[in-house]
Length: 165
Image 1 (cartoon, rainbow, N blue to C red):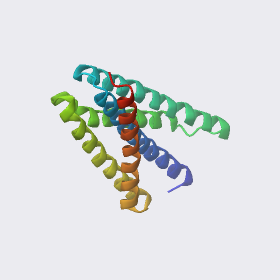
Image 2: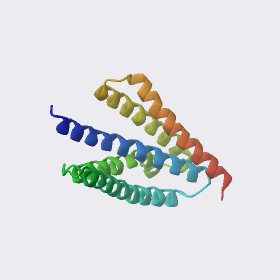
Image 3: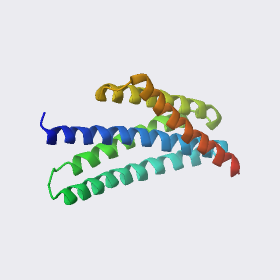
Image 4: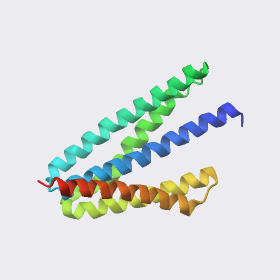
């Protein structure tokens, strides 16, 4: 594989992993915080949906702009920025509904543990799969992803408790 093709593949994989991880962590962190703050189900759904749409767009645009800056700096056109941005957008968008889905079907108190569990399982699988692609320790990477997600949930819960309605 040529160096340019390898770097393009790496960029796309990185965009996918970053999009999924950031979506899960941001969404479950927000949902956890506002759930423990006592916000109602319809407001939780609204906040989650707005977050997913806005952040998916923001992450896609950020990916595009950062790759465009790199291409301008290197004075080379790789034509990777648009596909990378699309991958970032869709990986964030789709993954955001994993922690939000339980809130569609049940009350917040019951949805919260399911949302956290679904996010942890997805983060672990993402870590294992990405580690396999990069030939690094799968368990270590899976656990690392879960710890990062756990930190976001903890921050969300602390803030939610601090500003409880």
